[in-house]
Amino acid sequence: MTKSVFPFYASDISALARSLNTQLAGCEQMPGHVELLNMLARAVGSRNFQHFRAQVIAEKRLTRATEAPAPIDYVALQRLTRYFDANSRLTRWPPKFSDQEPCLWALWSKIPPRKILSEQAINDFLIANHHFEDPALLRREMIERKMLTRTLDGREYRRVERKPPTIALALIRFLREK
Figure (cartoon, rainbow, N blue to C red):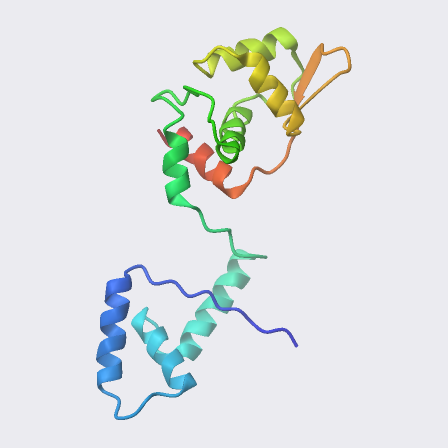
C-alpha cells in the first residue's frame, strides 16, 4: 500500500504560527498525532484534517494533476532576470553554468517552432535577441544542449521541441509578462 501525500500550504506563516499558538494554549496536555493534524488543518482554513484531505483529493481529481509542480527558486529567478533588458533581450552571457541554460531556454522559446531556418536566419534571430554580438556562441550552446538541431552541412536549423526545466519556464513566463 502506498502512502498518500497531502501537500500543505500556508499563505501566511505568521498567521499559521498564531493559530497554532492559540490552539496549543487551549490544550491541557500535549496533543496527539490526529489532534495536531486537525490543528494544522484548521490553521489553514479547513474544518479538520478529514476536510483538508477531502479538499486535496477533490482538487487532484478535478485538475488531473499527476505530480506536484516543482517549486520555483525565486532568488535564482530574480538573478536570471538581471541578464535581460526591458525588451527581454539577453544583455550579457552569464558566467555561471547554472545560469546559462535558463537564459538559453528563454531565447529558445522565441524561435519559431516547426520551422526550418538557415544559418543566416538563426544568426539574425540571435543577434536581434541579445546585445553582446556573439550568435555563434549561442548557436553552439543551443545545439550542444539539444535545443536546436542542424544538418551536417550547417544549412538548416530547427528548434527541438522539449519541455524546459521549471526555472526556465518561470523565466520565460516572467519575460513574456514584462
